[in-house]
Picture 1 (cartoon, rainbow, N blue to C red):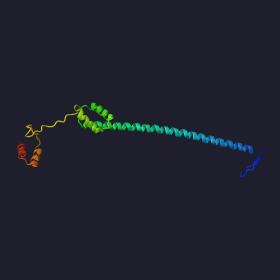
Picture 2: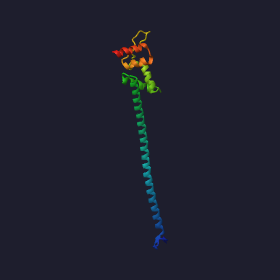
Picture 3: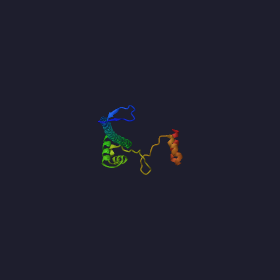
Picture 4: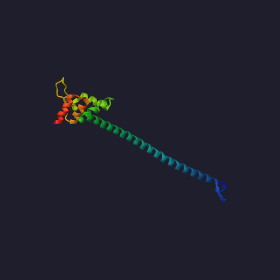
Length: 169
């Protein structure tokens, strides 16, 4: 083999040509292996992160669905209570089935339940309202201020007399 003097080294030493090429090739192979192992590690990290992201997105979707279900259930119960439900559990089950079976809103389902299953709700009781024609009793006025207000607004003599009688005691 030939000895070649390396220029720019300043030492003036000579290295056989065959040995330097082998050392350079070996160093390049080691660098290539190191780069590939780092890339393999990075690829593995990327795969792990992608898997974790997919799992997190699935979990988020599941939690959003649970939140929507809870919100719907709460709104349904609120509207049923406002409608005067007597048996909340039964009405809730019936309403949830109707919601699942149709595209109706909660309000529509509740009003439908009130009309079709009226036994689940408090009856709307109206006080006895009578008139001269019906012969029923008229609405009783308890408060003196209500009687005075009626007398002032209507100017009806009977209302004024009721107010004066109540005021006398």
